Length: 341
Image (cartoon, rainbow, N blue to C red):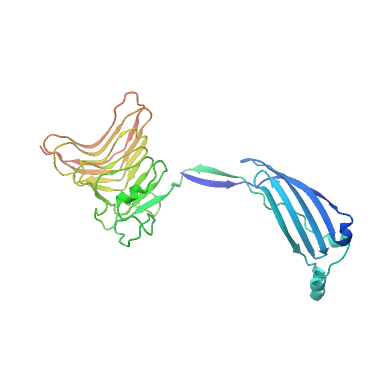
C-alpha cells in the first residue's frame, strides 16, 4: 500500500473596502481597510476569515502596513511591514528617486500615483489535503536494522549503525506499530542470531533473502540458529516472516492463538537434527473467535528428522476452535522429509 497527499486548488472570494482617514491624511495619507475571504473545498473544510489593515503612505514610493486577520484554519495572525515601489519613469533618474524616497510629504497621493498601487490578496491560504491509499508501494512505520558484522561499537538500529544481535532488534520494535525488522546476512554466521525468538503483534521480520522493496533484499539470507531445540521464531498476531534461513530447531516457525493475518514466505528451514519429539518446519495453530488468514509461500523445508517417539511435518496449519471462521490460504512450499526410526 502507499499513501499520497492530494492538494486542492480553492475557488472563492477575497474582498475588502477601504476609506481614507480625514485630518490624519492631511499630514500622512492613511487608509483603513476591512474585508474577508471565503474559499470552498471539496475534500476538506471551507476556509472563512476576516481581515483588517491600516496603510500609510509617507511618500509616493513607500507604503507602511499593519494587518490583523482571523480565520478557521490558521487562527489569529498579525503582520507589520512595508514595501517601496519604483515607477518606470523613475529609473531614468535614479538620483531623483533616492531623493524622493527619503522625502516626506503632506497630503494624499494623486490618482495617477495610486494607479500602480498593488491589489492586496491573502497569500497565506492553506490548501486542504487528503491522503489516498494505493496499491504499488508499501509504507512502513519504521525499519530497524540488524547486521551481525557491525563491530563499530555504534548501534542505534539505523542503516548506518545497525544492531548486531537479533535480540536487540526485536527489543526495539513496538507492538502494534507496524514496525519492520530488517536482518542482513552480515558475516554469514549465526553470531548474534542464535536462540529462540518471539515476535510482538503487527510487526514484520524481514531477512535479506527476500526482496520486499525494489533493490532491497533478495540476496543471501541471514542464518538463525535455534541451538537444537525449541521454536526458532514464535509468532504473535498479524506477523510476516520472510527471507530467513533457520537451522537446528524443533520447530522452525510456529505460533498458536488468535493469529490474525499471518504471512510466512521465502524462508529456508533445514538441519533439524535428531532427538525425541515432533519436528516441524512450520506449525500454525489458530484458536479463538474471528477470521484468521494464513499465507505460506515459497518456503524450502528440508532435513526433517525425528528419532524415537515423534513425527515430522513440513507444514501444519489448523484451527482448533469450531466457532472460529478460519480462512487458510496455503501455497506450495518445497518440503524434503527424512524419517528415522
